[in-house]
Length: 134
Image 1 (cartoon, one colour):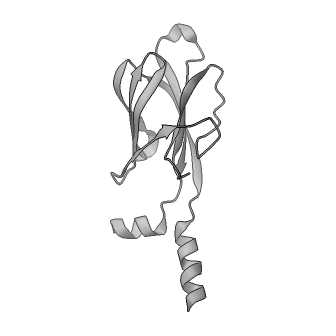
Image 2 (cartoon, rainbow, N blue to C red):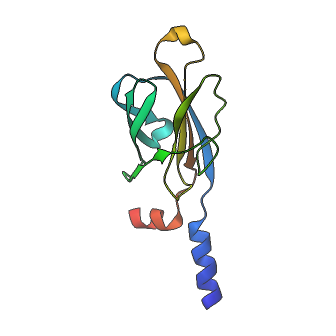
Image 3 (cartoon, rainbow, N blue to C red):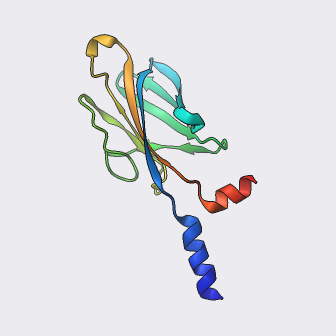
C-alpha cells in the first residue's frame, strides 16, 4: 500500500512543459498586461527603460505566481532565440521550474515597442490542481 501511495504522489507531481512564443507585444513604460494565447493566462509587469519588475503570471484558473529574475535557460526560464537580448529580462518562479519567461527586444528596432515574449508553461496541470478546481 505504501508503494502505491508514493507512486501516485510522484505521478501527481509530474508536469509537461510547453513553449509559447508571443510576438509583436506592445510594452510601454509603466504597468503592462500581456495576454497569453489560448486562454493560458496573463502576465503583468512594470517596465522602466530596459528594466522589468513586478512580474506576475496568472494562470487560467486565476492562480498568481510572482516571478523573479534569472539567467536565460536556468531555473525554468526558457533560452529564447533573441537577436537582441535584454539584460535581466528572464524570470521564473523561485525554487520552482513550472513557469518561466524571457523578453526579447524587437528584431526590427525601427518598429518602436514591439517585443517578443518566450514562455515555458505547464502543458498539463498537476493532477492535484485539476482535482481542486473540480
